Length: 206
Image 1 (cartoon, helix red, strand yellow):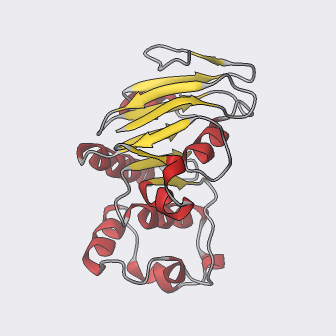
Image 2 (cartoon, one colour; image 1 turned 30 degrees about the vertical axis):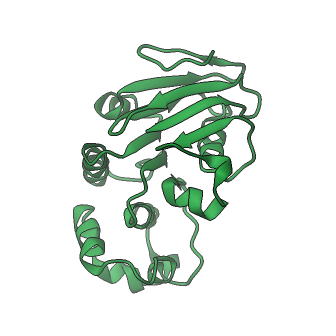
């Protein structure tokens, strides 16, 4: 379970919401409304006042690296710290699980050993999603996870997101794709550049 209490993000009024295991919250709003800022605050990548609790464990009670094992942020422009994707994957990653995840997104395992510079944007985005899921974080924060993908790859990513939800993970999804939100989200949080406002079925801030 993810519980957020009066989280102060940028210009927004304090945000409070709760997600049960297996639920997806879509965060919507125009560019500059604070969607990415919210995800980064939840992952403790940027400082933000307020409480964030996952399965009874509070954000401020854990070292940052431990928290990020529980709350995983997936950027639309993933970072790499090696020349090939494999060098940015955990060295002890279970081989069978890695192969299953690659197969689920129609990724050739040989991509792991190719220079990142020659990979397409979509290949890098899908590989980063695989990397994020390997250690099964309870909370997954997805920032435009299919923005660079073709329809077939997008469908595969959505299917993997559904599997994460069925497995009891919480998902917070930022997407400009209204149809995608309709397919995946259980609730919505609509942000504006001035203040958060509830949309249909939204989780609203106090």
